[in-house]
Length: 422
Image (tube, rainbow, N blue to C red; front, side, top):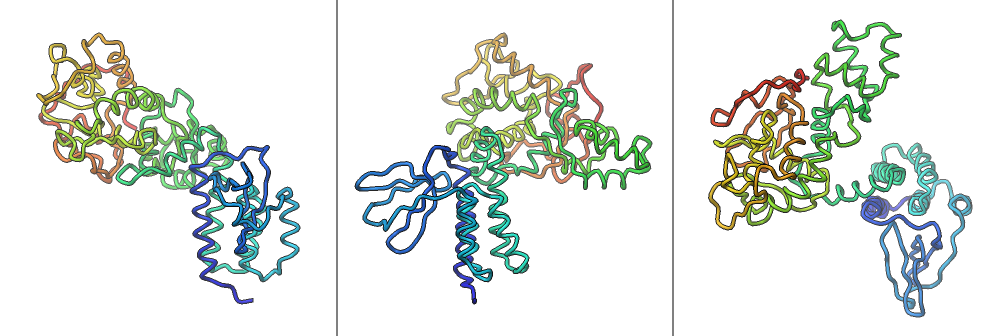
């Protein structure tokens, strides 16, 4: 049988779209009726029947509700369980019916039976190893399976991130910030891939703390991720930090997300009349759309982390209450460094004793010190007065406290809480 390659490519595109829709859709309720709607033109749509009357039918496919007119529909078929459906449909298909089997796999994926869909696609890929459309559909359904296994809160975060525009930090860059800011005393959830540990053992074999014997390496492989990362920090294996995965926001970044960013940065600093405008006042451009996504939260944090001018640093880890992020929000008669004269500006904090300001300052004090160089190349949101340290380097000792800030407040009081450079 000669397959219709054009149609297969269209199926690959539809498979990708279906998972994108699943990202932004809702989870199908278990009580809904699984049906197949057969249209007058022969098309078959698989999903959950959520509403019907004499004039229309509403079908939920991959989390998206699709209203259809009754006069477009030939019939509605009740669907059996995915396993029974798979057995019945597969029995009617020839082994070499590539398109039919791909359509079956996509239908199974729409039903949530990702495992059955991947079995079918796995057999097809063995028969057609060079078929890129099959490979694309396979990857897409695998992504749908991973998404379906996530807790609801993570699915919502994934949906937000799927809609996030460009000109923001990538997930890899976000993860790198998490690695540098993580507090190992909190015993965070961290994953160090086996391949990364292999590189670690090979490259740093001469270091006295790196186990060279099989028993020692096996013991480290079985250790919690935060213990593995602690040893990588001790050895300063900076070239491998980007491969480590920190699964959740470190505490100070979680507070930044839920309090400082949500309550203050978005609603006060990043308005369209201030730093959220097209140009960004003072050369500082903050993002004010898709505000709860990782990309927006971390891009704004990173932008604030890097910004310094003649008055000081936007985030001053050594003197948190002197951070321009806080000083510029104070009433002029209470600020050590008042906000520049700007038409329409109003203070957010009346005095330095404001409980919110004090809380924000305490959270800044929990960020890692000395101020790290994350090794990130990203310059989209600072046009002037910027520090240019984070450009293609991961040297943790390369530290903003001593670089490119000749005009900033560089006083460094004794810091009993500072930790060694990682």
